[in-house]
Image (cartoon, rainbow, N blue to C red; front, side, top):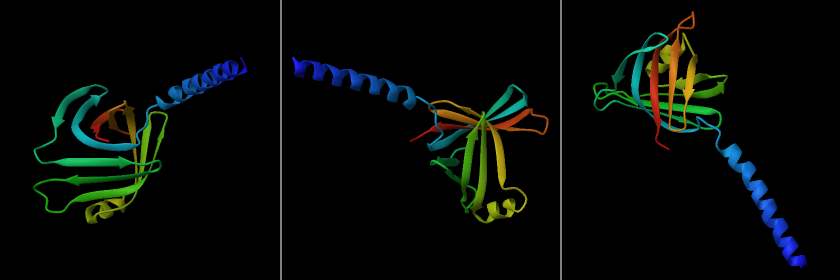
Length: 147
């Protein structure tokens, strides 16, 4: 009888603990590897048009717990592009702080290192949306999860 009560208690404990871990594992996270699929142009709020990436163009972003690295390949450009830094997701925003990158990125970093986007995050896709100084949507990069 004691063994049955002990076994029953253990099963209940495992079920209860398992129900808590399932609840927390379903939260969305940007951690992972993402590939650019398309761009959107906005009229301030709504999508005006979709621009597919050109043949051979590839852009990949990798997010760890606190760091980001992105790389871009454009067939017509013999030099690759990349950037590395940190990021934060907060209240529907993605904030990237780029620390260093390729030669062109380093020139751009002289004027701007912090990039803030509106973030729409789903399980297997996300959009980082650029907004103007009045909060109107202007442009987005749209990614799909590849890992």
